[in-house]
Length: 142
Image: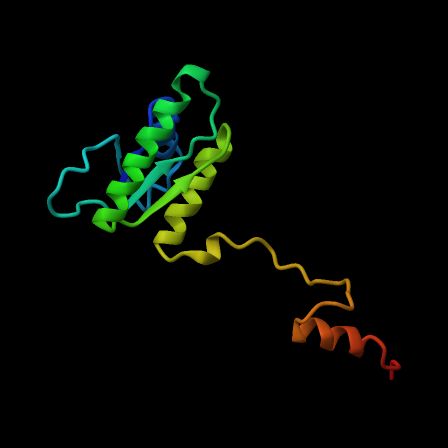
């Protein structure tokens, strides 16, 4: 799977590329490219990871980062490239990127945490399953 990592300066592109290279599953190799060109031509990426602007930055660079981010988003939209925006601090950023990769590979089972049943009830809920549980709980137990 060919993955491009894009983002404004100071958004952690290189750190994420290193983390993905070291933490990815060897059975499902990733071909990761840090800051490749989005020049016009045939699409060569299976997925583009776009870095979010949530990492701390000096006040003097915020406007420049936002401008570059807008340009990247416009290019991605114009070329209709599949992409995911990655946010998070420290190891959470790599974890979120891996989740986006798994989702793009159509591996949703790897993303789901153990299911938890909604055990409370509210009188303003319009969910039919919730309503069924609410009224079933009122029936006498046999």
